[in-house]
Image (tube, rainbow, N blue to C red; front, side, top):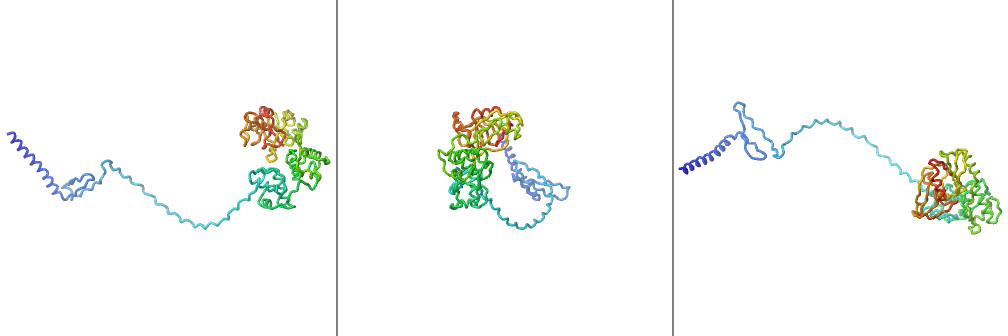
Length: 409
């Protein structure tokens, strides 16, 4: 009995299950007037809802497909754009005129230039009879030789090598262009100035007199000339005449070469004081330094303008002719315990006092073990600095305040 009841129940359930799909088919089949709305993800047909009280049915709107994982963001309407003002047509630009290229300035070699080109110039000058060193340094002696060469070749006398001078140097020497030795149209004496005096100083320096090449026939040049005349057995007049020039043109020998101290000697304390006081030199400190390159001495004074008293007289070495010590009035602007010598890192100079740019007062040259390398004083051989003994360098370093006036002549 229960089994019969269950069987009848199952028949009703199956019948109901078959009836429901049939009703859905019938219902949807009768609703063909409403178009189906496709879905983006599931093709299920959705029936439209109609109201018999309203006017004819309106087809339903199509729902846009939206990805299920991210809802669509509302679109923000953009602001209306402002119409651009039409640009004016570009003005016609006339074609640019061709500008002729600026010619490069001519190459000119002069004082301060160094290197192989200067060696080439010096080599050519020696071919014309000038007794100069081929050291690649366009110094005062090279400048003098160039000026003399230009004068002999009737080209502008500038002391620098331009294209015209270089072309002349490349020619073979002639009797008129070859330098035959020092000479002067008129005898030179104390007070004379100019290139002829410079030439006289150059040739006296070949005999080791170590004169400052300034073209001024002063006391030092006069003393050297008299000593030269005495050594060569000619009248000691202190005047550069024909007989003197003939001897100057010879090669130095052990008899004619000067081997003593520099031609100029130190002056007395009273003369040193008179010199700086008459110059009207002043100093912000109570000290004043005077470096005299003609006498290769450095003087230290104390006091004030018009009343300087000599404290110390030091022998010094100054710049060689190609790198002379700067001249003028300066002041102490820097100090240091030591520095290495350029191109010789194994050498040092101690207790330097700076008075202008790279110009210093410092000790003679030592190595790192403080062994003396070059202690020569009273000479023209530095690169512009003023060398004094180690003790004197330390004295200046310790006692001369910043701002102290340094006068160099």
